Image (cartoon, rainbow, N blue to C red; front, top):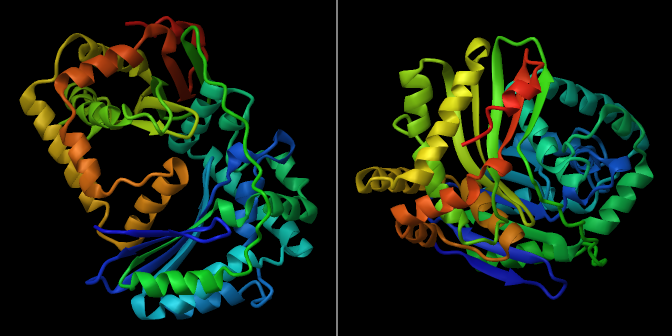
Length: 422
């Protein structure tokens, strides 16, 4: 899958990923800002601003104007906020590319940020926070991040706290946009049935009014540990939801590809080691996953699962036992080949649509400033050896680096901490 990239004089980047036989096109705008760029007194502002960009613009002043226009085009549209980037996108018929681009660029560059709409949206944000609090399978990952990083931006929630959200004002949004929604921090990706030259020409025209202020950076994440840690949030649930893992490497580290294979051995597919152990052999949990997550200044490798409350301790022992095996023994050539094929196959299956491709290329550009095509990623995955996997397992699976976050009817963190050992 070939792509083209162009950088404008103001620093804004454009990426085009043509898909000649695809009837759709996706316009995705990524801006290099998120919860890691916030101060504690304004935590949640990145996410709140994402909501407000859909609440009217200078050319579409009514709250419903944007949604009506996009719905009339029969397209899919949304936005999302992470720790290090925020995205806005619309996916529709290829023939509607110019219209999609016009709407997405408008909501990105020209939001009105009306005071009355901000006040109304506060209730929506608080309800969203409440919703996630009632979803322990997701909430446990917030507990995990706070356990790893504590009271710094990487450890805060993306949605923010209720009381902080309620105090936000229009001037907060204006100042934040001025600091972060600028050309040098913006990448526009177009994928689908569109000519690259046309895409670049229309993007440059549509984003002609983007601010060119100097981008404000973020503080580097403190990422150290000297002993195992446990964070248990008590909640009366029928299952205990857990995340067990260790610190790994930032996104630029070449060893992340080895960790992808290691994650595949443990938790990719129904024939993976943890699925067979926890679900098939022990019959104790419905879901179990493993994988690596990397950002610009930190990373972690973690196993997540939902298990019966009364079998939590034996599940923890089983998971740690599987991690230890990877330190002690080489993965067989047959298993390694199976895992690689599964990872490569799932990668390509995840790139069938124009929005998938836009995200694949765009997030690499935003996080790494370097793009690997699917073929290049496939080559790197296939090059990983069994010794590579064992070496990296020995590197990261160290007792002092173990961490456990969980939500469930558990109060004795001390007893659980005693289990965190190889």
